[in-house]
Length: 501
Image 1 (cartoon, rainbow, N blue to C red):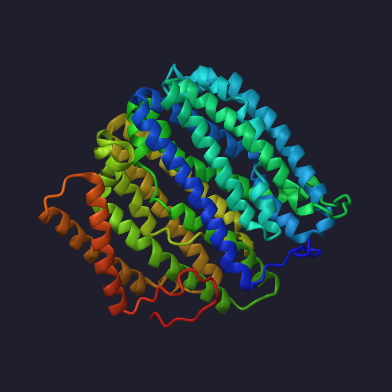
Image 2 (cartoon, one colour):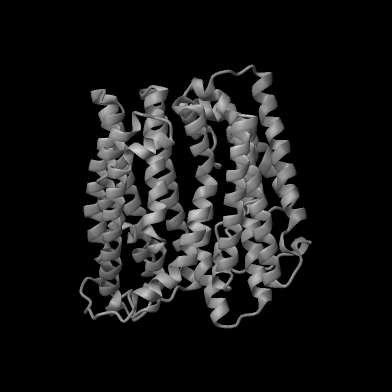
């Protein structure tokens, strides 16, 4: 394998390609989740669909705990070690994850009744026990994407994610659609698909080392856990922030309301794809700058460049989704979920502030503890406010407002921390005027698109979305050109210098 050297060193010329493949993988993963949710929302009753979503919620909650941040350690340690040690590193990390997966499966099996009680659904326990084998299949291959990314094989990341998500869609949907197997069929199909993904993932894990000699790694377990601990703690707090609202809705409002809330209250489609790809590229960039004692001016320039590019992508999509949230919900999940549009808007507003991932710069500059502490404070805040909400003014929409408000508070605190790291004020950290310009132009385009569909008295969901998106783009891009918003370099991650004052 000629593309492998003693250690992997990413080049600036390959940065855009790597970001593209990672973004494509995130897009495929998001799309698969959306397809499964859209299909099962129509095929299952609200109670059964809510039960399935609870199974997935419990799985990802425990996964965050039992994986302990180890998947992120793969790319970090593999990139630093000689390639001959790669196989040894993968085996060492894989054994740790397999042991953790065994404890995970035991916890799911033995704690099924407790989880069912906590989430207020007696139907949940038997399905969790059926699902208990899944960690044994999926956890040992959690590092596949990190392994392939470390050696520049991000095209295989996209292929792996695509194959795995196709299997999950088939496993979860086909038993319900063709055989009427209900939520039991969806859960069992997910488990079977996970086994197939495991086989493919194990093969890919050792693909980079084909034809390369192997030697034992000198990496110590304590060094691994020293690296992953702040990632683990901040991940736990972050997951509490994102999932506590769903827990309170499930426990206090019931499984049907949980299904309604789970479909409506989620971030903007494609936002996670963009943030994930950006974070994957920024961490090695900032780590390299810090190790080479690079100037803070270059670090700030990279930060501002990423903020601008992300805003150019996220803001128009966010505004459009807010204007046509009702139609989007009906198109994705059926007419019964139109009212979930309000929840979707509340969640989407967060994207206007969350325009860049903070963890790469904070991890690279030694501020991991600060990053973790801010997430802990936010998690505690949202739990306290949710408890007050369900006891004194119970409302799904109030739960959503609390969640979004706390997340936006956390984003502001993280911005202040990054500003201090760069030695500048918050006003200078973000290109506020440039961001406002994009937001205003997007709102104008949104009003035009909504006006056209209202004037033509369009009611069918699909035609409304098609016509409105075309009108939105036809209005927005001429305005963007008029205001000199350059979209030609959005997909580039080169360092640039812009006058945005």
